[in-house]
Image 1 (spheres, rainbow, N blue to C red):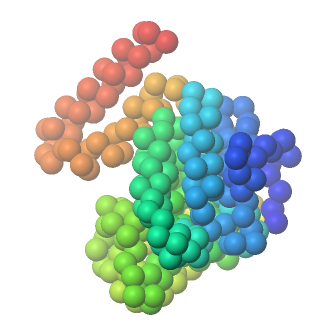
Image 2 (cartoon, rainbow, N blue to C red; image 1 turned 135 degrees about the vertical axis):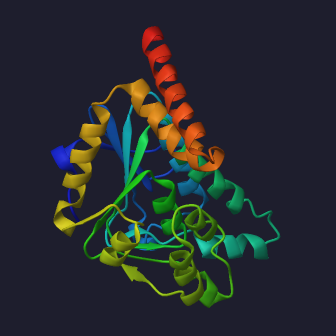
Amino acid sequence: METSPDNAAAAPVEGSPHVVVERREGWAIVRLAREAKRNALDRRTRIALLRAFDSLQGQARCIVLTGTGASFCAGLDLKERANERAAGQRDTSGDEWIAVNLAIRRHPAVFIAAVNGMALGGGMTLVNSCDLALAAEDAWLGCPELASSAYAGAAGPTGMLSWPRKRVAWMLLTAERIDARTAERWGVINEVVPAGALLARAAELASRIAGFDVAALEETKKSLDHVPAQVRDWEGAMRYGQSVNEAIRARQGRE
């Protein structure tokens, strides 16, 4: 397993040993640490992710999200979900999973997915939700749900908001995996790096991003969602750009 840059102290999130936060100057690493289960997300891990993100509000301008061992994330813990349904318990996993991904999108920090290995289902959703994504050259990604007579309920729709239709259709309808280079070519991943250099490259980017003005950085992140969702014409886009700079200047005057 690649060691973290600078060998900084790591601390598990309260309530779960499966999410570890490593703080740096202006940025942080949030690591999924459930290696024996390929970093599959059970309820404790989902709640711990929300706590980790919340603890970094105002503390980190950039957050690197990565996994432990040979997996980035194998998705939701389907065995736990099935056991709870069989026991007649209310299934809250979907709502919890939506909350985790919305927390990433709405967080003021820029998120970088550092995909260290397998990213399946929910792992793909995390990649989609992050602002930037790096992958080790031996990583691979997939949406295998159709092979199990299910729909990729989060990775599919978030992919449709992020990639061309034919790319999403291939992932959903064939249930085949794609390698890191293919994901980079398709625009799912920004950059592929040697496995041993993944966290060093993520640290380099995170440190650079953390050095930017906080108001400008946060308003720029907001624009990445606002423009595609709300703006449909060139004049509207440019006027929105002007309003973003006005918001930045106003915040800088107060901070």
